[in-house]
Image 1 (cartoon, rainbow, N blue to C red):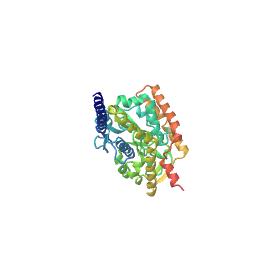
Image 2 (cartoon, rainbow, N blue to C red; image 1 turned 30 degrees about the horizontal axis):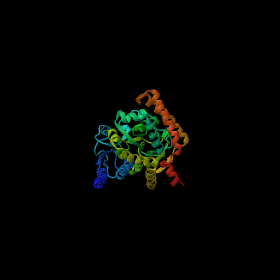
Image 3 (tube, rainbow, N blue to C red; image 1 turned 180 degrees about the vertical axis):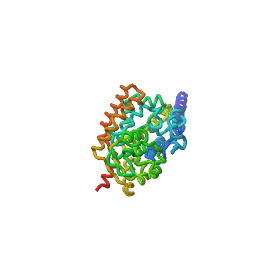
Image 4 (cartoon, one colour; image 1 turned 90 degrees about the horizontal axis):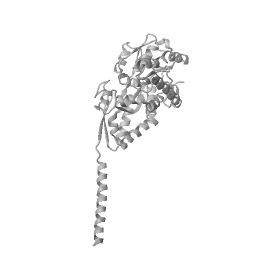
Length: 369
């Protein structure tokens, strides 16, 4: 009799062990899909948006269906200037944020926008921004505490040489010229003796065509090619200004904190791939294709002499950084200077390791005889 009871007890324990495991496994397989909205102001084919799209595809695939990211490009969900508050308030979950549209929201981050700083290659800027976010807490707090955003990663608009309607061989050739500039790019043109014009990207081609603009600066090289700007401004001039426009890809912080470790790990793995090779691989391919296309269309590539580049640098820096410290930075002057010193240190660390070639470097390598 006792043996019978033990047999039934063992059978019961085995049954509950098996069914309990099955129920647990079934519950795990039925975890609710989390839907997110990626809300972006640029077109899907722009390089920054294309890189984000690669990450969203990676996350959806590697989360085994637990994350679904709906994508809204070209301001189809919110207008320019509305994206950061939308993520902050949880209306959208993900976005690409260019600082120039949100000066009151990110005054500390505006201190990472400059030219002629020695950050000559775009991948240098990628790693400088990554490390600055980790090491300089006021910058991180500006995003996380002030704006309720987790920066997933920092991207940028690759590199932008000067695109001119006529040859431009020196700083003096910019005097009196009307040059399209975005944000601190317009300030740079002003300091070099030209007139920075804040023309929206969609109107740059026709503005060149009508003579409203003499040239273009602070405009993504890859996008410039696809916008056919070289048809109107065929002189592609390397002036030594350096990398262009750090940009943050953000998630609503409350949502990020709510994700379980497994899902966070999926995002982080994809982001690591971007930093390790995906950015350089993708942008390098696109830049080379665009150089080839411009050359085939008759564009002329050139570079200012070292003497002119040094002259330009002295006209822009340290004045540009000092003005941010005096008029824009929301921190003490001591903290502002500490941030800039850290930036200099990081540029010195990563610039010698850069792998992403400038358009002019690609041109010399492939087309100069």
